[in-house]
Image 1 (cartoon, one colour):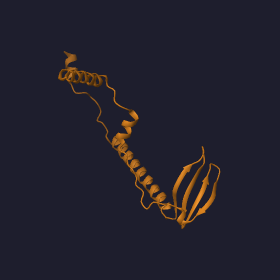
Image 2 (tube, rainbow, N blue to C red; image 1 turned 90 degrees about the vertical axis):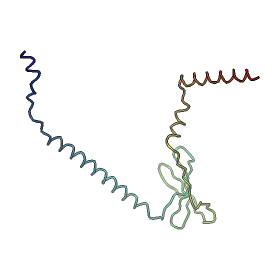
Image 3 (cartoon, rainbow, N blue to C red; image 1 turned 135 degrees about the vertical axis):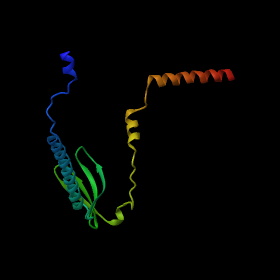
Image 4 (tube, rainbow, N blue to C red; image 1 turned 45 degrees about the vertical axis):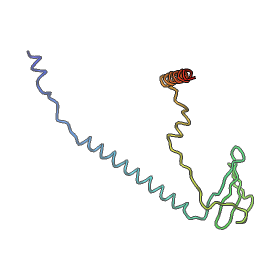
Length: 147
């Protein structure tokens, strides 16, 4: 009988202090917001550095393991440069008439699901392939009956 009274009585737990939990959640939210704004400010500062419109890479092609040739526009000039791991060399300067630069560049955006399907390949479920095989057998039987 004493065991039953003990089991049915409410526990003598101390009152739970919510303040440390609330403080931890508040600090986590504050750090996340601070990180978000710092990253955003750094991205904006970096974007402003490259937005002058004076430099642009028009075209690039790799010619070796760690070397490439680039066509860049610097102000009003078009330069062909060689880029290696150690140095950058100006190869030649081109006139406007020698450079074929499209006015607009179309960017093809491929949906993620199509890229994923391409890398995963066709789905090969044994149940699906068995069902498809059964359907093919029925179709061939029907075709033979019709002939």
